[in-house]
Image 1 (tube, helix red, strand yellow):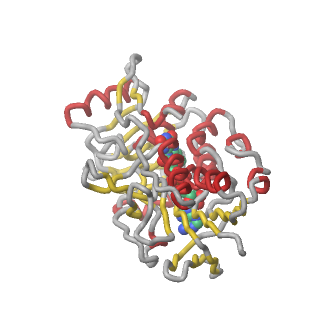
Image 2: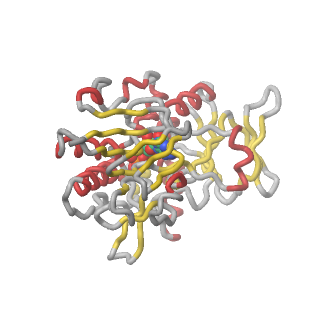
Image 3: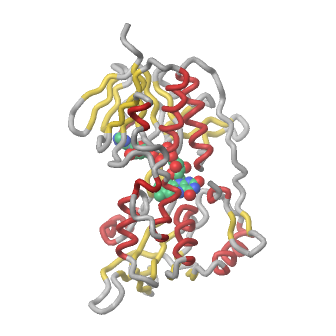
Length: 341
Ligand SMILES: Cc1cc2nc3c(=O)[nH]c(=O)nc-3n(C[C@H](O)[C@H](O)[C@H](O)COP(=O)(O)OP(=O)(O)OC[C@H]3O[C@@H](n4cnc5c(N)ncnc54)[C@H](O)[C@@H]3O)c2cc1C
């Protein structure tokens, strides 16, 4: 009999948690991991280390390079899925290949959200969403240079901490995404903003960036212009407005999608052969009477593991791990559970 083919779309924390569990529970099944990325699985929470001298992706790999061969897992890199046909259990790639699956785990994560009004300026802004993007940002920032961070979010603020620590200047233009994914009450916000200032971040509150331009000759490389006509100069401009699920390639698959792929607590979608885990999915919470996201390395990995156990016959509900409260620590600095990994 032909081995069952388990296909995982996504080579992040969720996809790898799923692959390890699938292999443990079924030594004979076929496992294929598909990723758009060019590198094996690395720890993206370690990306700020490029500012501390880590320029080689091998230093942040989670598994040794031989891991996929040792585990008999096929890793398909540089491969973008454009469509999933749930009825025929088929995945379509951008290069038009079709792959058959018996069971599909979608662990496609999220991508940085950019407000529509700034989308024309994407090419003038840096990101930090991959190892390659982190290195480009590092190269674009001269020693002691200024990074203008639009929004913040806990991923951006994690980078900001490292930049301050390594002698750069960070100017933060705050908005409703500044503490994403934390939900911050109005009466807590001032205290958290003060904690950011105490950490050395220069906060500009209450402006709305609408244009990003190249700086004039002899001036810093970027100029961010506000709605009220004011502006600010810096070497790099970086949007940090939280993540949106990467679920658009699932639109024709037949599964239910709201912002993310909708799953029950067992991480099962509305298609009997498709599960989802990680930043791409919203999980039904009976307590909240709504679908909700869970973020963070441990939550996401656990989701991958639970989904894989359910793919292989279990019927386990996912329970979120983390205390998700934002706090100010004894030094007066911001402290987030998303930074503890
Ligand atoms: C730079 C960065 C730093 C972060 N730092 C933190 C942090 O410090 N603390 C924290 O709590 N959270 C952090 N996060 C949030 C974090 O991403 C997660 O909660 C978690 O890592 C998500 O894991 P995941 O496996 O769901 O997805 P990801 O790690 O995003 O992996 C998604 C995978 O899906 C693949 N993929 C997507 N679409 C397709 C497609 N169409 N075809 C083929 N492959 C596809 C991608 O190539 C990738 O391999 C960070 C996120 C980013 C982007």
